[in-house]
Image 1 (tube, rainbow, N blue to C red):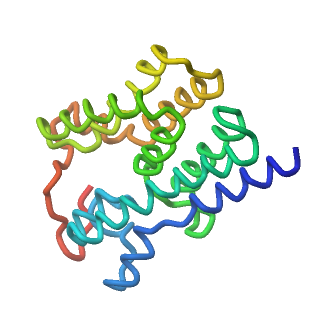
Image 2 (cartoon, rainbow, N blue to C red):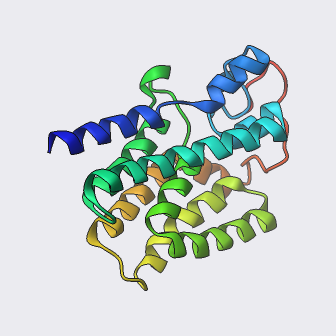
Length: 205
């Protein structure tokens, strides 16, 4: 049990590495949480810093989720509570990073890594639908919510384990809670669309 708890803690510490914050400090000397949407994630990195840094942040944040699940799988086996808990810990770390005063992102890129590793086919199908939604609406937040909401639905048609199902449902709660302001903005037609630029020196909410 002690070893399983250790890998969960390590997964949280791994998730707490905010590549968006680090890259913005390195390349522009700014705290990205003071610009654009104020979110420490790939979408706001795109808005503030452009495509190259955003792609790098997206890749690294996804990688955190993949690494955490594999760490849990190594410790407890495939589809076990330990594997799921490590994935959840990485998402929690991204959202509330201990290194950055618990002010992180919304966890979607890391969630993609976690879900794609735990339940690849349901995540893939949900991801395709989410991408189509983003292309049609240009709302990344809407696509993100569609992805997390549909993954457990498609999971029901597979040979899933109880930890995988419950873990995916907990992720839905995380995502909708973190995107609660986006949900309000979408309903009011005020949500930022992909491709919108942040004004230098201003926080655009």
